[in-house]
Image (tube, rainbow, N blue to C red; front, side):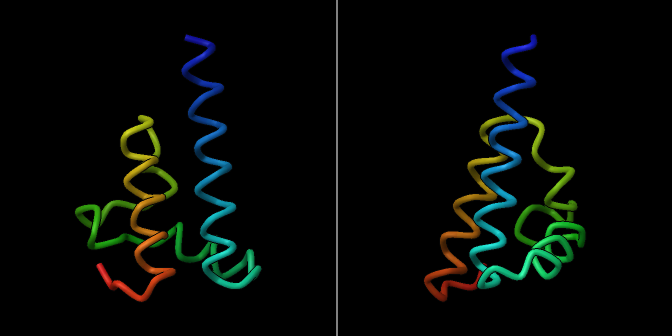
Length: 72
């Protein structure tokens, strides 16, 4: 159980880091984006969406698409 929690915290940190990169280092903008409902994940709030490694990976994939101009 402790391993799962550590893994999710690591993934949460990865999502936050990638979101910050998406907003060119603007952590406040990244936090704002992570705190608002996102249609691509059923209008859930991204930062609350990270409860499994699969869902964290889904967010990382969305961020990757956004970085490449593919609006989801």
